[in-house]
Each structure stands twice: as structure tokens, then as C-alpha cells.
Amino acid sequence: MKDIFHKVYGNAFGNILLALIATMFLITAIESVGVEAITIKTNIFDETPIWYLIAFFVIPALYPLLKGYVSIFLAAIITVIFVYLSEIITGAFSLQYKHFDYILPILSSGITKELILCTMQILGLYGALFIILPYITHVISKKTLRRDFIIGIAIVIAVSLFSCISMLATFGPYRGGNIFFPKLLETQRISFGGFIEFGELFAVLQVVSGWFIKYILAMYSIILLYQNLFERNKIFYYALSIIVFIAAYLSCRNNIAFFKLLNYYSYISLVVYILLPLITFILFSLKREKN
Image 1 (cartoon, rainbow, N blue to C red):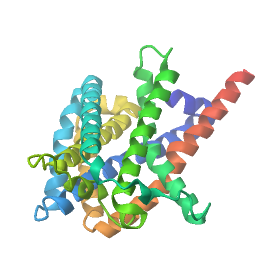
Image 2: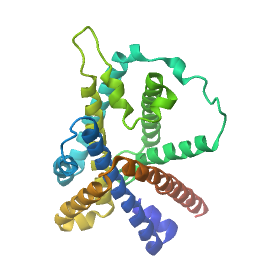
Image 3: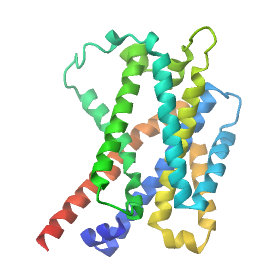
């Protein structure tokens, strides 16, 4: 990734853009910590200080970060399996509470400004998928990389569509659009056979494990970009974690303010995670074909 940016933009401007991407990785890590902490505090542990929830998230994450690539890889695989299993289980048990007529008619208002902005925000938020770019250099066999990437994106799209349709079929577009944490409320209704009533457990598992793995992937992407710096002195791991802790604490003190920040984050993410890499790889391909 660093070589591509240097070849396209030169060393000086390439380093500036790489620093911008690294800063975006850091903001994504702060977002992951903030969403997890504010979700748990608002819905489960209301009296727990927000700094404690952030610390409970940031400190354990230091272990896989210090252990390196293999630990990150194993943690990602295990976490994704558990998240998808819990999604399937909650989807199956909550199916009886769905009213799919709530999602009809689709696009009843046509193409509006709000729809376009919403689509841009969704693309921006899913742009965080591109935090995997620094990991590509660690892929041993790249022969099936394109196929595997397409399959992975297809799975993410399918799960995301299922989750959105599930939420809309439970609450409807108006109620669902005005709830901060619809997934947790959706799973509270689960009751099966008079003895299964722990749907929130699966929602909490998805929130904690999902945002945890996103956090360590974003943090380790920074480490991969500046690998020599972090290998030289371990104190940079702790310094980076302290920065995340302080920034997450300052941004999570108010729910409404935090969600407003997430709105700005979605647009910035669209530019840095999608448009910038897209333009860079197009220019790189054109230069390679010319040479």
C-alpha cells in the first residue's frame, strides 16, 4: 500500500496521504470504542462511568495488538464466527415478531435528497471495510484474492441487508429511524417455549465482539503502516491506546452529540476510505499500463 501511494503521488505527497489514512484509522478505532461504550452504558449499565467501559475495552485490546498478526487473525476469525452465529439465532427466534408489510412500499417517495444523503452515509460507514488494505501485504497467496474479497463483500452485504430488513419489519421505518439502538430493543421481545428469554445476550455479544474486532483491526492497520516505528519502541502501543481512550471519553459524554459526530464521520469516511483509494488505484493502474 505504501509503495502504491509513493509511486502514484511521490514520496512527499504520498506520505501526507498515508498520514491522512492513518489518522482515519485512528478515528475509526475511536468510533469503535465509543459506539461500544455508549451502547452498553445506555442500555445495560446505566450507572457505570463511561470511562470504565472505555478502559474495559481498550486495555484488553492491547494484548492481541502486542502479540501481533497471528493473534489479530485468529481473533478476527473466532469473532466473526460468533457474531454470525448469534445473528442467525436471533433472526430465527425473532422471525415471529416481524411484519414485512412494514417495509412496503419500497421507494414510495422516489429518489429524494434524503435518500441520496442516506446512501452516501451508508457507503461511508461501510467504507471502514477498507481498513484491511494494509493487511494485503501479509497475504501469502494472492491468486484467489479477488474472488475471496468478492465473496466476503457478498456475505457482508447479505448480513447487513438481513439486519436492516429485520429492524424495519419489527419497528417500521418511522419508529425504527428514531431509535438509537434498535437491535437491542428488537431482541428484547424474543421468547420461545416459555423458557428462552435472553435475546439481549446475543445482541450484546454482537455489539461487544463486533466493535472489538473492528477496533483492533483499525489499530493494527496503523501499526502496519508505521511498523518500523512501533517495532523500535513498544511505548507507541500504549501512547496510541491513551489517545484513543481520551478521545473516546470526550466524544461519548453525550449520546446526541456523539451521533452527530458519527454523521460527520460517515462523510469523511466516504472520502478517505472509498474515493481516495479508488482514485489512487485507478491512477496506479493507468501508470502501470503506460509503462
